Length: 144
Image (tube, rainbow, N blue to C red; front, top):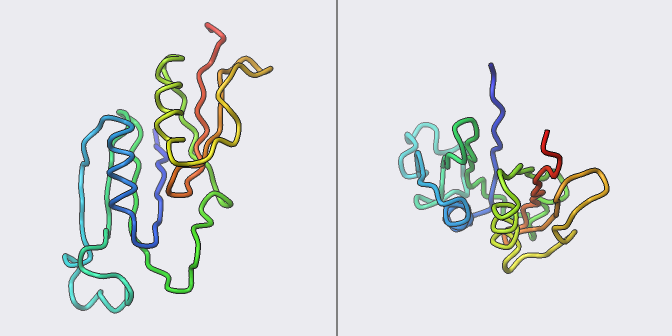
C-alpha cells in the first residue's frame, strides 16, 4: 500500500522547527542533509540557501508516517503564510496523548479551537504552532 507523508518548507528556520517537532513527538531524526552537501552543479538552483540551511530532514512519527522538510529561502517572503495552505492532522492513540501533543504544539503559538469533545464524537482541537504550521489534533471518543 502507498503511504502519504507531509513535506514542510521553511524560510530559513527548518532546523529550529524540526528540533521543536522532535521534542513534541519524542522521536529521532532519520536523516539531516544540508545545502553544503549539495553538489556544486546543482547549487545554482538554490541561490539564497546557505550551507547550514536544511536541504532535507526526516522525522519518523510512527511506523507509517514521516514528517519531512527543507529550507527553501524566498527573500520576498516577509511572513510565514503556511497555515493558509494546509493543516497537519494527527490522530492520537489516547486522550492523554492528544492533550500532550496539543499543549506542546500550541506553546508560543495560537489556539484556534481549544481541544474538547466535539459533536461528531471526537476529542479535537486546532492550533497554530510558533512556526506558523496549522495542527489538528484528534482522538476518537467512539470505542469502535
